[in-house]
Image (tube, rainbow, N blue to C red; front, side, top):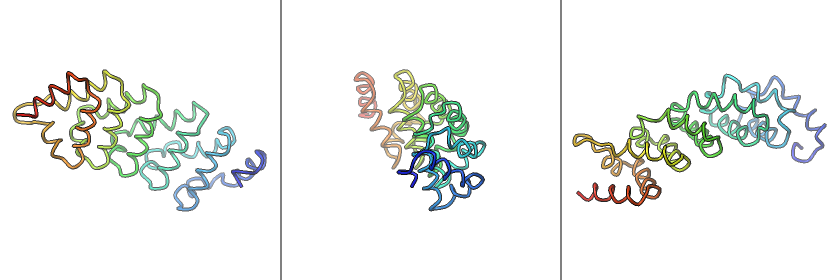
Length: 206
């Protein structure tokens, strides 16, 4: 119905959900209806849905159904101010979300679709923990996305953090042997400069 009926009918229909949004989001069937509302109804007509998420974005992002709904908001919300509130809550919890089995997808979504300054905020939150995060089952996917979507200067900082090794702590070697982090090393080799790749290859040949 939400896909095919007229706008005034859609508006009337979705109003019946007012006061029941969070209950629907947590439901294995209801979450699909909320997603469809976000996809098919103009943002100004479903402000009560977006407002219901305020203060709960991190919790919803770690929920098997809630994470899908938050991703739909990021894709379809045309009200920049309201959408920004959602993004701000994600950025605030970016480090914890990156390590969550559902939250990592929401964090990746912001990296893929967000503004450059939003990507920078996520990268700065993960900075100092890149090696540890690369060895984490879920966070490793987020770190890979950071490397893929960051700017050149940020990419160099991420790579420097990994290869800034001491004799006692060879980060790159331990990452190469790790079941998750080895994908990050492959990503680095794909995306780094020829000069940097040559140095990395020489380092590991010893």
